Image (cartoon, rainbow, N blue to C red):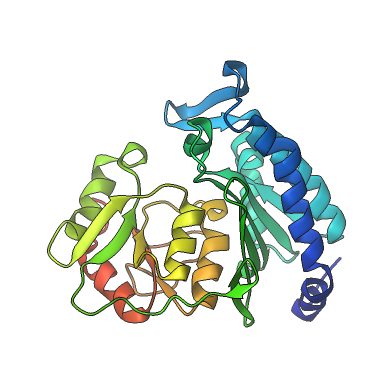
Length: 281
């Protein structure tokens, strides 16, 4: 069993390429052959008509679960579909062994509709801290990576979030209205004012990448699922950005956050965004 962060750092130095290879193989074997070719029987609903899961989600997660656990003996895998089947799996994220957090197809709705704006997300964590992340958009052939303390990269090139241009309305990706309650919509309502240009988000992972690239200024999200956030939050941090909850604390992937929360290009932007958000009633 891996017990020390230093050992994981050695693993990342020696085996990151193997994680990237696993990502690409999972996409090549299970996701891309079904992109724009999904049969009706390969698509199911979970909680409702907007919450979709496909054979690509299930099979890619199974592939990554087997491969990642073998790459790092003693580690556990917490995947979106595994948690849907058994919510108790989620608690491993706060434990004392390394945990891979996996979202096999982030942006399943986009995937189902033939939109290339989806990705596969992997984060390696220990005791609730994200140590490394991988964001792979197979239909766009883009791979973003981050290692805590070592920066973020997109296709090998360094990422820097920078700061928004002064005087320009902040571009903010928000929780999509199809996935939010009325109370959550009210909590985000303050963004619909001068100085902000909110829009519904697509794939959360790609929204985080947009912030890390400086193409978008911030996110404002109302849900906590670690598979949607862990990889992207580290990517933003290592690109020079930050994230804040309504109490002014960083977002915790183990849960219990004051929502909504933001990830932003810089601290000033994060404070501006949280300043107009309110807790759900």
